[in-house]
Image 1: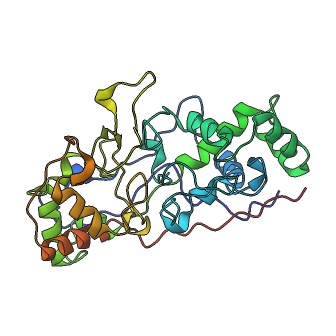
Image 2 (image 1 turned 90 degrees about the vertical axis):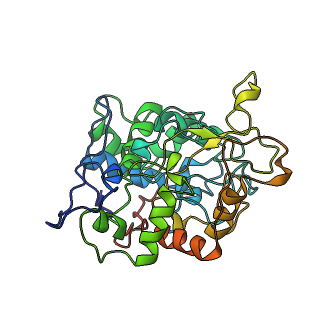
Image 3 (image 1 turned 30 degrees about the vertical axis):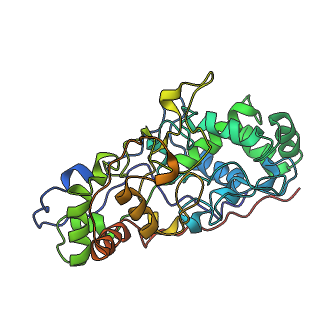
Length: 331
């Protein structure tokens, strides 16, 4: 097999730290030194590369018309530029596709937080009728008919070959390598006072101060991985369990903010087209028509301050990542 789309990400995420003193208040946003891989599925470059091929291969959908990358496109921050991505039935799915950027650190997964692992998330998305609409038996049959896939599954998973568990291991291993690159914010956090503009520094102070965005968007990924009712006008009950618990209705996952400028439109339903609309929503304390008490509080902000907040958010988008599409094996 020709591994032309080699995985560029390695388990250790290290970068040169400048000798300048770190700006105050940024230690809490320091990037981790390594990607957390499960003990049962440690990092393997070849398995991750195989997983990347599967991630981009439409043979994983029932109609062979979409792939995982159709909804999680690297060009759009590993989301979709549509309010709701188009599934295998050529119809919009239920929600705006969440990013899988930095997925190794995300738990639970999905907008509603109803999957505890990447493997479980893949099962639900692959078999959902409105998403990829297929079965693992069907995938196994299709991949087994491809000589290269059959050869490499047997080599990388001796004695097991192509089966549900090995397909999921390969996919999840690749997805854990999808890590946001170093952004200008990281260079600022490492001590380069010139890495971000003054407007972004003012925005960061507002983010951590009066706007209190940091109460949910914390840590190096800028998320606490919790579910909240943010006052959206929606009939979607979000993360509520079955049977429903009214206390959990309308709650959705706090998304990380890395590469956020690439990921429009925003919110679980893709209803807000710009970051300015998002900030205004939070400043209002949610939608007036939501007719319930959300978990957020409004805050006073001027249009100039919104511009500063956006300037800060722009510093969280890396400009160095390049994700070439793999060359898939022919039938």
